Image (cartoon, rainbow, N blue to C red):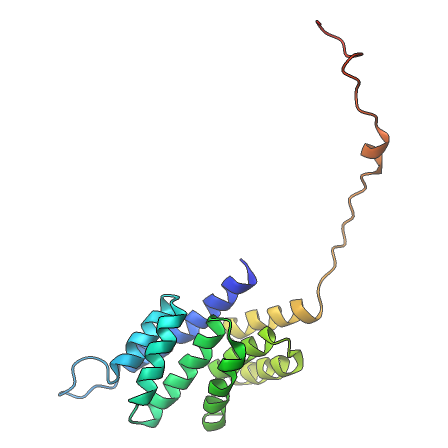
Length: 181
């Protein structure tokens, strides 16, 4: 699995919870999600369509009418911009969520991914550690921690292939080979 694929899987998994949450607080007079743009934006991000997901989520943020919707929008924008490879654009949205909900481990995970993309390793490590304090069993955070270690402490192969023997052997001359001419 490539590094980009791992990032996409982690982001999409974090978005899944947000997409499911958007439709769960309904009254008897509301049919469907409270904010259709946030809902459709989350679904687009889950499907891997970062551009459409971010576009719809930005529109949903404009029509958000409570804190929960604003927080969901910013969290999904954080993840969406990382998905698009626009880590600098992701950071303000990650920061917005963390400033208002410092116990949101998913935002620490996503911001750590943004920091990794920007080669800001110390900040990524701090976010990974804070996220793991909040949710020690998170496989997503453990995977991001592995990505951080790969970037900061790469493993060098301990196996060497000794091809000196092959270099010493001379190739067989086709003229001297036994067999019919």
